[in-house]
Amino acid sequence: PTIYAITPTYRRAVQKAELTRLSNTFRLVPSFHWIVVEDSNARTELVSRFLARSGLQYTHLYVPTPRRYKRPGMPRATEQRNAALGWLRTHRSPKDSGVVFFADDDNTYSVELFDEMRTTQRVSVWPVGLVGGRRYERPLVDKGRVVGWYTGWKANRPFPIDMAGFAVNLQVVLRSPRALFKRLGSKPGMQESDFLKQITRVDELEPRAANCTQVLVWHTRTEKVNLGNERWKDSVQIEV
Ligand code: UGA
Ligand code: MN
Image 1 (spheres, protein in one colour):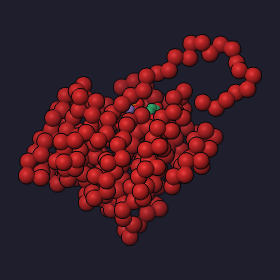
Image 2 (cartoon, protein in one colour):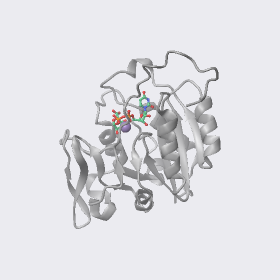
Image 3 (cartoon, protein in one colour):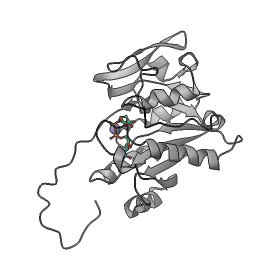
């Protein structure tokens, strides 16, 4: 199966650095298709050029987040992930085998993670490092089934798991055509649960990464860059 990694991304000083880090990992993954969705009114030149040079198989989409949703406390990248799901439902069919994964642009992914998720029958899960106010969060597994969760934050969520902690078989995405991310009524940290509730149950989750005992993805967050000395312009403007 092809791995479809869905990456929402938006313009900021560190964007190209983040995308570079991601693409260097993704180049090491066989049968990989990157769906990059810009949070913008149009495809930007920076991302267009970047993808064209990446050597990766990709689809480049864009959809702006409505301005009223661009504020702290609002879930992020809802429209972008839904645009990617819409693309898959339009351009892929029951004869295509694939696995869909939500790959935010600032996380850190090990190549092994993609080997683990490639065998996803319905929905697979694994630990995520550096998230939820702990060193990691993970599903608790007994006899091959998820029976609980080790989580530091909002433990009563139906699926207390970060976006980076699960993958979905493409056919599940196609067979549940109305399963989407929601913004209204979706509080921070609830997007994953709201989405997973629409497509699966806890007792059918497929544990990966040695019964969820290995961390193969980290919820890293990049420091906001200091541009306080950006007062004089260089005579040429170099893309950063
Ligand atoms: C956490 C989760 O890991 C995210 O999957 C979830 O979307 C997010 O919370 C949330 O609150 O909704 P966090 O590190 O706080 O992640 O969020 P970011 O990494 O800043 O954003 C998630 C993704 O959305 C990134 O790929 C980012 O590039 C993109 N994004 C962010 C946009 O497309 N537009 C924005 O205005 C902000
Ligand atoms: Mn993040």
